[in-house]
Image (cartoon, rainbow, N blue to C red; front, side, top):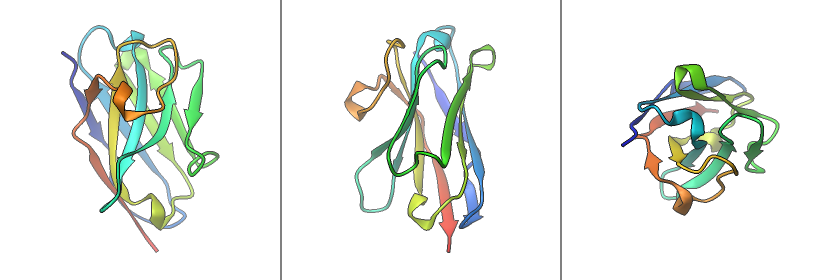
Length: 125
């Protein structure tokens, strides 16, 4: 069993930055594909970004490409989401997610094996 714990959320003004972290338990983290999803009030959970097991390939939703950067440190069992040029539309609960097969990118929620509990990001205008 893998536990994912997100941190780094908060309140920020439009145009600002935040860095989310997701710490994973377990010895298999380095083999997992990882991703970030988000869910805004009244909306369905949506894909944000994903990264393969070694960090060699990343993939972003069109709405965040060029503003967000996903990365990972397998020595620390941690995945990050650097969020720059934040917009009010980025306000949501952000979830860390893991899939046991790490050789390809995650793009859909039904691929996920493990979810974190979420961290709130609020961007004020």
